[in-house]
Image 1 (cartoon, rainbow, N blue to C red):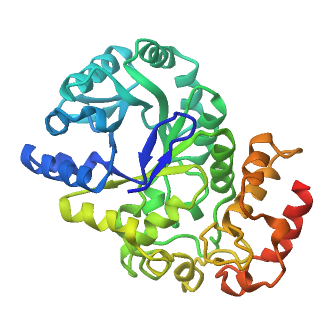
Image 2 (tube, helix red, strand yellow):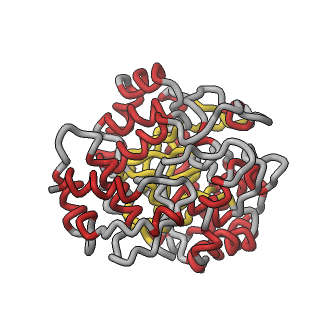
Length: 381
C-alpha cells in the first residue's frame, strides 16, 4: 500500500482509506473482520462521521491495542439525538458527542478533528467566526485533536476552508460525475437520474479547488469516490458507460492534493477489491479512454486531467506532473517558490521535450502537450 503525505499535516496516509459508514449495519465481530482486512492490506486511515453509539463502540473495540497504527478522522458536530443522527452547532450537544467519540474509541485524541458537514458559505462564516471554532481551537490546544479538518460537498465552501489558514485538510466528494457538476447545496442533485446534457469537462470551481489545495498544501481525503456505486453500471452512470472501482480510485487519486480515498467496506471482499488498485496495471486504471469515448458528458477536449495516459516519454519527462506544475504556476502573477522548487527537482522537464508528439497521439482528451511544454519551458526559464 502506497502512502501519501496529507497536505502539510506531516501524516503519511494510505492511498485507500476506510469510510466507516457501512459499518453501522454490522456487529462487533464483523466490524473487526473489516478492520483486520484493512490493516492486512496496509490501510491506516479511517473516517468516522457517524454518531450512532454502537458503531462507535464496535470500531473502538476493533482498534483496541493498535490505536497508534491508525489515523482517525473524527467529526465534531455530528450528534446522536432521539435515536438518530443530527448535525448540530450547539456546543451543549456537540461537546458531549465528541467526548463520547473519544470514550467509545478508547483513545484520548483524534488525529484529524473534522468540522462536520459545512456546505454553504453562510454557515462557514458562522462556524469559523463563532464559538464552534473556538471549541475546535480549544480541542487542538488540549491535544484532543492533532489537526483541524473540515468535511464539505461544495467546492465554494471547500475553497473558503483552504484559504482560512487553520484548516489543514478537507474531506471532499470527488468522482468524475460530481466533478462536472457546478456547486450545489442540495446533495440530491448529485444523485439525479440525469445530468444537464450540456455538462462537459471538470467544473471550473472544482478544478480551481484542487489546484488551490495543492498550492497551499491543504490535503484532501475523498468521500463518495464511487458516487454511491452508480458509476459501476452503464444504466445509472451519467456517462452511459460503467467504470470499475480501480478506475474510480485512480481518477480521484490523480486530482491535485488528494492523499486518500475513503471507501465504504461492507466485508473483507470489498477491502480486497479496493486494495487491488495497488497492483493494478495502467490499462486497468485507465479511466481516461472510457470517459473520452463515453456517449454522453464526455470531458472537454484539450483539458489535461493528469491521468498519465501520455506516458511513456522518450525523454523520460513526467508529462502529467509537468502539466500539473504549469497549471499551479499560472495561478499566480509570479511562479511560487514551492512550485519552482518542485519543478527544478524533476529528473527531466519541459526543456527536455523533443516535440515528437507521441504523447499527443496517446492523449484521450487531445491535449496539445507539445505546445504546453513550450509554454512551461518559457514560464520556468
